[in-house]
Length: 462
Image (tube, rainbow, N blue to C red; front, side):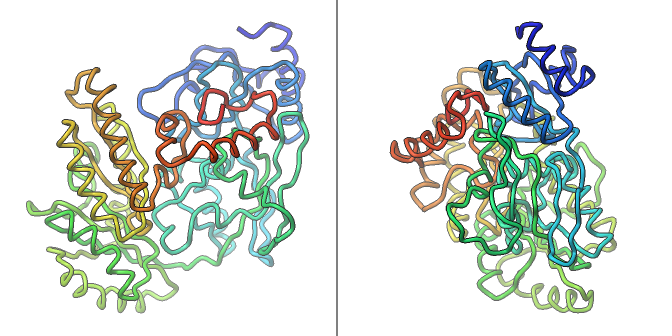
């Protein structure tokens, strides 16, 4: 346990009320949304500004105390888990939208701002922040940056990485720096900004972010296409884009996943007995009539690709139910069974082969999977359910299957994570896609930023 002198030092920096020793609170931050993992920290500290973050880090660095930065705890790779005890540094109090600059299409925020809260505020100004992870109602901007989060509409708008202009980052020694400039272009030196995006709390703590925003398109029209086989559904994704359509999002959903959601939630979601896979297609624009015309052109196209039914929502509530169904698959599966969620991504045209390979591997090793994800990006989330598997099968056979899936991704030019990160649970698979030279370079970067190794130890860079 941390000595009393350390607790007193933290209390002096952030105030006694923001130094938490209560077991219930520590248990709450011992886990995130990753499987059933839990690691108890020794202390929870909640700084309220950049200066306090700086002082906490400086003290921890001088006294070799491990620090695990935590946003909302909605991650799926275990990146924020305090696997070696130490201090959890929460960004919960750093939740201010500092400045909305509509003239320059940017906003400055603290890392604890909830993604959806930011969207709602920007809407008042006629703007939006496009990245929309499934957890956008609870995940923080800081967490989104730490993982390079994407979302359903990344097919049109891109991911978090495409919207971060500049970051204020506090380093382990207490120094705080701005990584870039508040400009759309920056060719001055190496991009420290992009180095921080996806770094999972291993290099520093983001305390402010300048983000690019865009005018709100205003209108959305959803289409739901049902298929009786995986191949047609997966092939149609690329065919939609090749035909010149540009939806904001194309989401693939396996019927088994929707069934699990509907067993837990009352949602208006059309189904027939023949349905096996669905594509949820989001069209966006400023004019409802133009969107309807686009949908009318897409309707026969989808039927030609093998869709057995194509639906439009009757009203906004039904459309919201469809989004709720899609965004709830992961959490609903977790309620039903212990599971592992893999975040595979391949060049989009290989999506049909990936889906087929996942099911083949599942048959080989005896596990059931529920597949869904951002098909427009070639990003397939694979939920592997423990169900009735023995602990031996879960710890031995399932990892073999995961390895074969990841090896396929590598073979076709993909990788093992599109947006969830490596964190704790994927570190043993990193060698599939990274060479020893890759790791030497990245470990060298880690040593420059964090020579004492206090930030997020026990993860993939250690």
